[in-house]
Image (cartoon, rainbow, N blue to C red):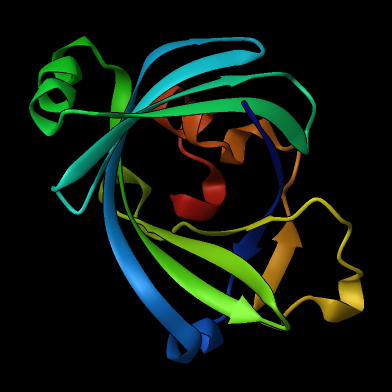
Length: 157
């Protein structure tokens, strides 16, 4: 088991694009979601898939279990998806030794760009990159399960 400790930010500037080291095309969907727990399938670049279980309701910290699964089985499980399939491109961007995952959403969520910073320690605001916008950690409407199952946040509409 791993602990997922993350902060989320909206991104309003494109200054991060020149710093991107990698990009991954992601399709993900949820098989189950309830308060404090989700079951997700993620397909990356159409070549690999994993099943993720998350537990906990704290804004910054949850228990997370991830398992690789056969791609063909992940595609079959899509028939059991609840809500919408999320399409996004994840970009890896480093700033001051920290890895930020910048997700550029497509489809119905086009226009939404969210950066995640997973780190066990608090990063002081002055250490954060200038291209980050408002912090949305704890705002459930910006969490992937909510994006799949709920409405579309105004920022993406």
